Image 1 (cartoon, rainbow, N blue to C red):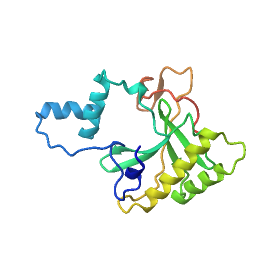
Image 2: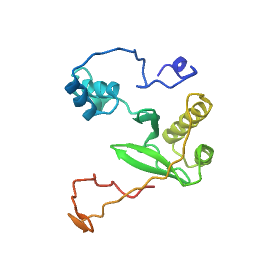
Image 3: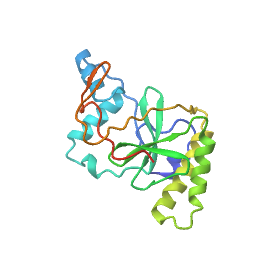
Image 4: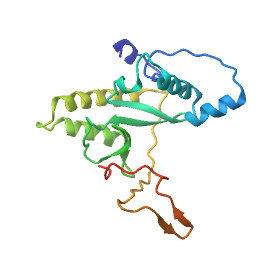
Length: 190
């Protein structure tokens, strides 16, 4: 990514690359269909194009080590590449999809605790070079995000439900829970 783009003040780039505002008029059923791909129409169009593009398959695109990923209107998660970030002291790395995971803090902890966890991890002399570089980049991102006047941080508690192996269906007081309702966890949250 261009270093000049990273040093600009203001909101981070939505797609992590140069973008352009475009006004579209679409039939309502097309808008509904796009929202099934992603609630944000811009992301839905990008994902649709990336799926069908023969120019460069999505699998070949390098995954950032750490980034803000939009999950709803103006809400984002800090998402990291868990192939690189194996552990951060006091921070849960919750698997999402593939090598992507989001960072979760204990109740009562905030951005300062996350930054301290990164600093503490960087002090480990046994740290591999690739992880050290990624941690330095994450620390730079965290500092930039903290100083960005267009970003505000909120700590939320999350509930992680782990499906135990060997269970197809389980009956609760409200009926059966289908095993396909939630993708199986790739292991306990670290």
